[in-house]
Length: 327
Image 1: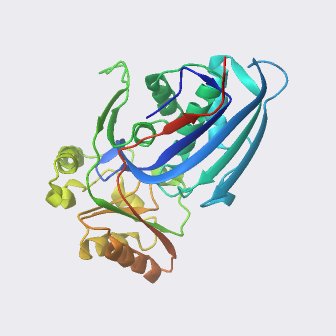
Image 2 (image 1 turned 45 degrees about the vertical axis):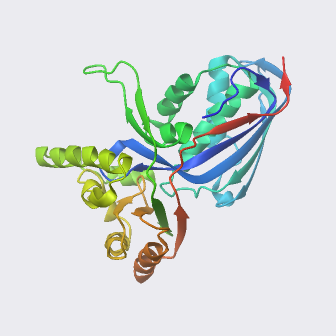
C-alpha cells in the first residue's frame, strides 16, 4: 500500500482492489486481492473544525460505474461512515467533503465492496485531516469496523493475506496479518442475479461443528496455503474443500451447486464461493473463459442471469495519491 500519511492533503485519490475471502476452508481469516478496482477522489474544503463542533460536515457524494445506483450517496455510505469514524478519533473534521467514486466492484457480490469502501474512507480521511495514522493503525480500525480481516486486509495490503484476530484467552494480544505473494493463476468470477445478504448467509450456518469437520478444514487450509504459494495448483481441488460454511450457503443460491460442479467439469483447478456469495470463484490455468461460460449456463438453467469477470490476483493493495498539500 502506498499512503501519504505525513502530509495534510486537501484532495486525495484512493484506488482499492476487489477481494475474495475464505477461498473454501479459510473461513473469516483468508483473503486475496483481485485486479478489479474502485477509484475514489475525496476533496475537503473549508477549514477543519473540532469533531464536536455543532455545524455538521457537508458531504456531497457522486457515484458512477458498476452498480452505481446501489451505492448510497448519504450517511449510509460505508466510505462516509469510515471517514467520519477516523475524523472522530482524530478529533477534527473538514467543514465540507466532496466524494467522486468510480465503482467497478459489484455491490453485494461477495467481492469485498464494503471492505473497499471502508479502506478507501479511512485512507482518504487520514490524509485530508493530517491524522498521521500508520498502516497498522488503519488496518486495526478497518478490521474493527468490518469484524474480521479476510477482506479488509488484502484490500489494504494486496496479495494473499492470512489474518489472526486477537483473543483474550489464548492470544494473540494484537492482530496478526501475514501477507504472501498471490498465485499466478486466472480467476473467474460469476455473479448470479440473486440477492443474498451477508447476514442471511451467516444465519444459515450451524451453531457448532463436529471434530471431524474441524479437522477437515484445518488440513485443507494448510494445503491451500501451500498450493497458492508454491506454484503447485494441482491439489487445489482438494485444498478448497470446506465443511464449515459452503455446503449451507450454496444451498441458498439457485443453480449454485450445479455451477460449482460445472466449473470443475470445464477444467477449473479449484472452486469456491467468493466470500459469503452469491458469486462463485474458480481458479484457472488460462483466462478461464470456458469455465465462466459453463458456470453461467448452470445459473441460466436455474433461471438466473449472471455476470462474469475474468481477472487475475493482484499484488497491489490500496493506493493513495495526494493532491494539493497544506501545512
